[in-house]
Length: 337
Image 1: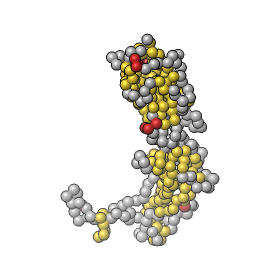
Image 2: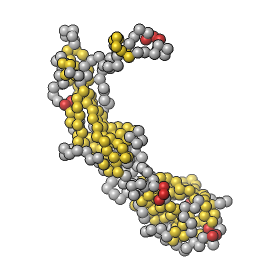
Image 3: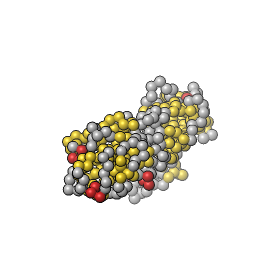
Image 4: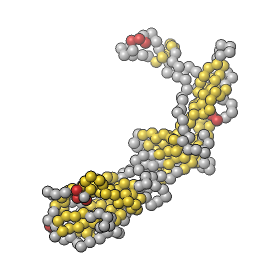
């Protein structure tokens, strides 16, 4: 889950005519960088009348958007604004607009903003919805985000010269602050290196991505000589992503000698915030339920000659995120004496 996908009616928003003109009160220019603008002052404001209309965003049933959304759970939102009215606005900044009329349909853009990552995620088309609606499905958790909508509609009004008109744009925008709850367990694996021997890695990948309803599912990938997967990875498909991910011996086994020394490193992480204090790995007796550790926990180097290896041994990785989602993955360990 690495992205936030928003499904919606969308189009590029045009934010009005920003025609620059010479005005005594215009913005100063940097003549060292732009000497050709000597004697020219640029206005920071559009010279045409550009109405700004209020916009309210709420749920399809008319209720307020919740302050907390849930990752991968879609909601339908509606934008309410006079930009869809049959008559164009007659005022802009308290100025009367002479004979205003619409000149095109409304361009609509929806965005989800993740303030924590300082990223904007724009929308794509959803058939069958009205122009002022969209389906929001946030796929990346965040503690600080916003659902926003921006609209623009081209209009015309009469110019001072008889028989001429001026093109401008009415704009409308709004947003609602939200946070997105994390419901995806971590995706952690291990990299294992045998001293003076083979090495390999295993790691889970959520599949299908952004699955809802729960439970989440994942494929586990194995690569490297340790797993006999040099030219092509071995993939164990369709495990429930959670606290009881068990690889069967007939699928993949870690084969080592009783005198080997293993160097172990955690790889992967969480789609939001991993709780590093709760990450544990090592050798355990059996698979499923709470791991029953054998030997040291979270040691980067394991000397197997100093550990009493049980008959039903597994290497495990136990991880949790700050929301409380947990992942425990067990891989069979075959120690040859």
